[in-house]
Image 1 (cartoon, rainbow, N blue to C red):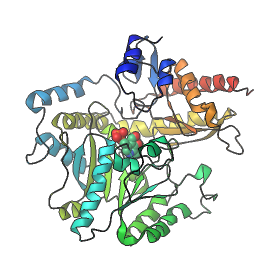
Image 2: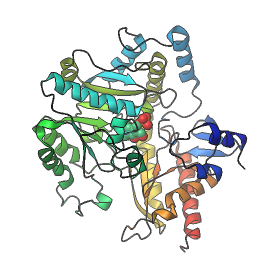
Image 3: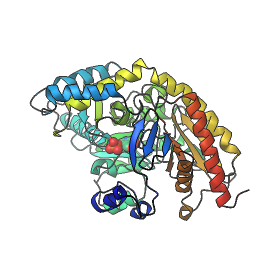
Image 4: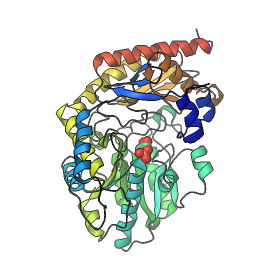
Length: 447
Ligand SMILES: Cc1ncc(COP(=O)(O)O)c(C=O)c1O
């Protein structure tokens, strides 16, 4: 029998995306406290958090009193007022601050509660822009296989996995179509970079032709994909994508919900690839998880074309969440956390590469503090383990036994620690992962 909290959770709470049997089997810890880059469960076990809260928002570590204080001060002054028909100052101040650091020509921001709503907002900005430009027929959204854009119905319709999340919720929003992904380790069209000449990006051209250029509103892409663990694009990929979007008047939505605010070692992932998005989505690290906030930003040209943005979420532009974001950004800048992400990210990736001595450790890749390690049954053939082995789940459990939290993502392990991680914590994390790999390999009969 689990603890009272676990039993109550089973009775009274929907735990997102988690099998009830795993909860009953005691494989789902109750986290009660955080401090710096560590969290503690109700049994007193301490874990180095290599996943920044597991969904990756926590850029600045746990227990930041100054963020709590900024939220408290704002709550006492004005905790809430509607995002429409009136204006509140924290949202204006945050939007202005963001405009000063955005990549490309982004300027105007819509604040909502999370990444999924940011993606919905991006789709609405795209549709409304085309509507007012007399291109009302442009409604289709191109996404990519293996893409993740969230859980609300529009965002879910852009989800590029054939998994229960899509299938159980079908029918989804019509008009979503999918491009092949730039997954070089297992190229979907069996080519090799750079000889492929970015055929996976060029496929966008024929897809738009097929779907009807006059019907396509936008192409949405994560800067670095998460579906198989961190997957940076090959060099030149986004240049090609931008050219094709421009050729057909299709808006380019860049989804920076994970990577925005320093995860990749630059403030925005776009800055690695010189991408100039028409619309960009953000969330997670914007408040480091201290408050729920997502955002979609667009250019002056697009914002000016929309006379009144048709959108109204009760908790849009929320004053307390915007205050949390302002303080989070101040900390990221003051403590040079973007630089730390670049430096510690390199060190972390070196550590992962050193683990490729393991028979089941395939490609190690990453950018800044977002890394992945492919787990393979056969290294040469890159064969994944059968699903029934739940290999990445086994590894995450073994990792926890050694005091670290990381995550399984498709056939890979994923790592996205707080941007505050130190050199010695990186070393501890890699050592623990090494042990977890040995444990599981032993269980699976590897020598
Ligand atoms: C790229 C991307 N977009 C959107 C989302 C959805 O964000 P949220 O879970 O905050 O709704 C996520 C969540 O992981 C994401 O990774």
